[in-house]
Length: 279
Image (cartoon, rainbow, N blue to C red; front, side):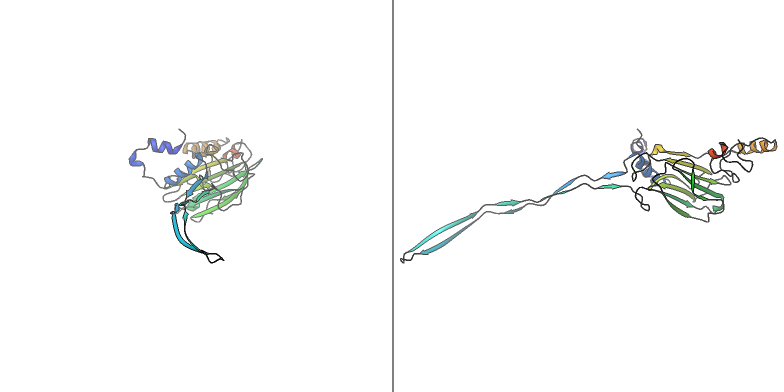
């Protein structure tokens, strides 16, 4: 089935059940959260306190009555009390907890970028863009040489945003060495994570939000597109040949000198310059 929890339990060898690589546990939890409801409602609970009982009692006494005529009457009376049992029952109403952003106002989505340096932060470049309607708007951009080390950035994304796009490059193309890497999360759910040589040099993640009421705009897994390919050496050599012969170059994603931040900008002809993006 589509549920990763059942797949993991049914098809994983028992010896692997509790063995995880770095970051795998967090990634599995976040993936499960995409399939399973992020809103949890506690069930109604009823509690009953221990019963308290009062035993039956009988009281016997003697009374004397004297009339005005001087006659005295003596009698015996008995009072009985029946046994009683008392039980207290209380009901706790259900409560609902939603995985809401911790640092953003209600109705906004929390995007968190975490970067751990491998000692060569000057080789890393990344962007975050949003699209409400029309063209893409850059929310943040950090160029090569601008990252100085480990960093965490938090952005609150407007509820009017229909799509988010995150892109990260390594200028040399050899990725981020261990123990370095990066992760991005949306509303506390990790949607991309690459540490310990898992990042090969290029990654692009596009998130499309569900058309649901403001305040509940939590994306599902099928709304997240991830691409981890990068330009091949053959493409680079091909462009050298094309440049020498005056031909338009191929659109290469992640080129350090490329003025276009995204390949679709470049290849559509919307962005031109530096001999990189001619249609």
